[in-house]
Image (cartoon, rainbow, N blue to C red; front, side, top):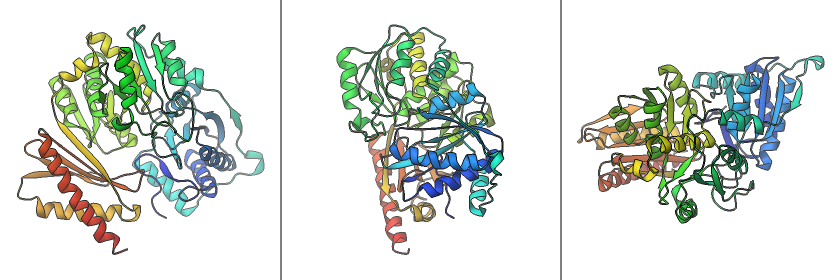
Length: 461
């Protein structure tokens, strides 16, 4: 059996990678993993096929003796706040998150709201591989109850507010994802004046791609600037990512916003230790060190962030895609909490977000993703690793190996990261330097060697 888990959970094309039949087996494996009698919260996003997969999972869970609490359609962070409130033993969420409409995924969470760590994923996969499921007798089948968790979510996040943000103006863009309506309602309850676009749930994502990124957030930037809002925020299909827009319409990628939220964590939230993924800009590390904090690097994905945060007792962790995690909340991204904490920072600093960004150090980070068959991703990494050692050895560097890739760090502070996507058939390359031309040159060299590796290896299989 090929590896099931990617960067975060299990994802794939409906009826190709994830089928109803497979979802039942995954449910049985989950019942074995969590244990008979466990109470597991199950929810989904609004994609029609997420319901198909969810029903299969629930069937397997019940057959394995697990008691299911069904939350229905809800943002992923809402389900995790409810997991804490209901004191369940874990949660499973069926969601395609930021991926195209035809993709579906399954995320598994523990009692503390963190995803399964890598060792636990391997244990889960062994259960699947051996099909060592435990089907209980008819009189021990699990129970099923349904709950509405919207109020739990809103009240849980509102309790986290420490500084008044009432009167601020925010434009929200849920992108027709499952956070539509909910994010607006939550912020309004906090006293924020909200203008919403793309705020009706629609699994076709007709207005923009569910992955919020600068190229599809231009309209959001125009509206923020046009109405004189303090902030704009866009999220993905399931409401865990937060990409911010400044009052001047500038769109900030997760590294920049993450540097500000890291500053907030050190100055106002009593933490010195910050966890960042290896693909995050060095801007964050520079800011953290200036404030007397410590940066700890980890592999890409919320499971790695959460595991590292617990390991070093960090109060804040981030990924450059717009996922921000606080240890005093849930071990997962939450667009609502991130928005509130960004607004609190603006209040405390008495500055606009563009003013705060202007004080950050300057770096140029470039990135790309190249189509790559899933079947040869690992071979591509090893091929590129060998070539890098040969053709770039004229320039002193340090190579940092991560789970599925590696990062090349140069003496001048520039770096290049090579890693296969854990959610899509793509290979990712990131390059950063103080100078835009150097960063682009590093990226282009990386692209050439990866494309050559894919061509060479694809011809062998």
